[in-house]
Length: 321
Image 1 (cartoon, helix red, strand yellow):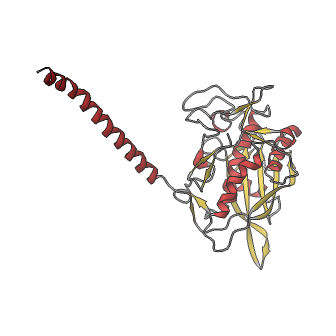
Image 2 (cartoon, rainbow, N blue to C red; image 1 turned 60 degrees about the vertical axis):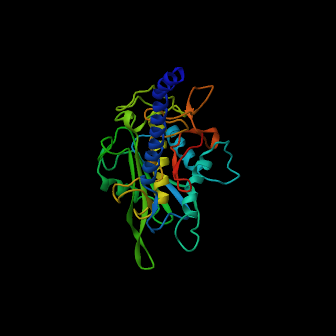
């Protein structure tokens, strides 16, 4: 009799254990299903940027020399030249994730790798097109740079309003038809635009160096170069450079539908280090002297925050730290 009551008493515990086991199994199956249904970074057979490409900077509006140096040093830091000194983890190490896209392309012949170098810098401190710019103005400004073997980057100062800036974008990249001809045909060139959001929308375009405007609230981090607006521009520029390299003409690598796609960096929005979650950038490195947060070293002793990149070899977001 005693053993009978003991068995009945154990039934609820056994039943609970079986339920938990089934729930765990179902959760694993659901997670696997969700993972299997996540969009892949597909190659759409278009050209990628390749070979030696110069990065030209078109400065529109009022920028201090120190601000221009922060950005130009970042571009120089993309180089993997062993003579360019960068302590690990480095910007050039971060860029190596982009190199993986070239090795995984479906082209029968191996696509040549990409090498960026700092090119010309054009200053327009007189606001020649005014302080309210449209997308057509951005193309006009981008056309002032080289149009062959180049990426032209338009950077607008904090007092310049740009169409859809702060509403749906912090920057953008695209392509335009150049003025010159190659083999009798007009060629396209790639360009990028990034705005300084310091006074217009730092909570949207300079996070995590400013309190977020929406979503989970967290304390802002100290910007590594002491400039919330320009350090925020570097984050956006870094992601757009990765997107430009791997999807320069909207038929390269991207997830989802054309025109509303996710690219190498935008597929990993808000992730900067291991442990990241919505409202938290991740377990970043912190400069003991300044308290600034960063995840990459650059040239001339610079420190930067760069976004996670989608690694096509692992189908996951890759971070430096």
